[in-house]
Length: 281
Image 1 (cartoon, rainbow, N blue to C red):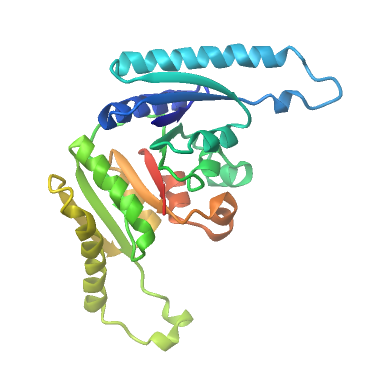
Image 2 (tube, rainbow, N blue to C red):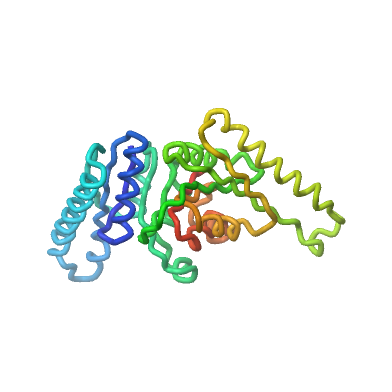
């Protein structure tokens, strides 16, 4: 089952469309979820007792519109809708248990605002077991390409597996991006000089080894290797400009770890304009 979170915004409408199309391709049911968060209206000495009822009515309206959109776009998809009380991030994390995929809309607040305020996507992506797809509100032309970032760790393999499956379902090419950087000599003088050609050949071999794990199971997927020396976030952001979906892995450190340590998945969620799937390793 695919779970789609909605809140009545333009981006949540885009998320519902995405989820409906993916449910059709994957041949799985779709559940639309709206979180009813009463807590902000129950603070203070005299909380407004009428507001919870208003929130429930508004939630029902949002769910009805989302369900109608699914039936319009993909009438053969089995769809249900559910109001759940609680904070949106917590509700979606709970709903994602056992799901094939969680789809939510993206609100581009910018790096500074997102770092201070957080967002539902930042508090969900990388913290649930299933892939989390973050969908922007803007409609983009189809490019026929899925992009996935890989490195030399085994933790990228779930992201690569998801990317291969998405490329197969869409009939798209798969661009495998691997960006590598040499350590700065001033901070690692003991490493001495490098044979750049040898390093480049080794990085290409990293991609071939990763792709070989899945290519036999997906002979119909055309694989494009994109290996170069660059910052990983910059490389993936550039590749995403011609992609229908960007797939990245996550080490699953959660929101606090991402804030303190930085991560490629967090970087691309800030900077890319195409849908991003974060797949936990």
